[in-house]
Image (cartoon, rainbow, N blue to C red; front, side, top):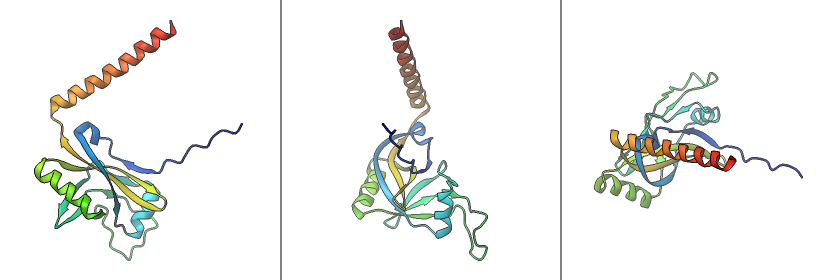
Length: 159
């Protein structure tokens, strides 16, 4: 029998610090308004999301501080801004939910990951509240306990 082929990983970049620094809430999928050289750089995975954040301004969502490194083959005739603000493409109902979460709930909007769907670049975003230091310690302690628990269970099964 032939082995099943694994589905290709369509992830371009992840914000690994997001779940560590924030208590995540509702997630959304947004499109991005990009320039041609940015899409080519994303195909090479030259994107950093670690310091990125999202701002709602005049009824639109904008991605700030997302660094996209330009390729060596990028045209020198165009002015290239590696960290330019990118507009997020969301439905009005989603924008209203995000606006309400920021105003009423005190949430922030965090980018989680960039990925491909067919030939379109999508950004997974979530609402979240920042964790305090003691919250980070507690979540780290519970993760460590889960690892220890699974190790102990595995050892007891092998005996």
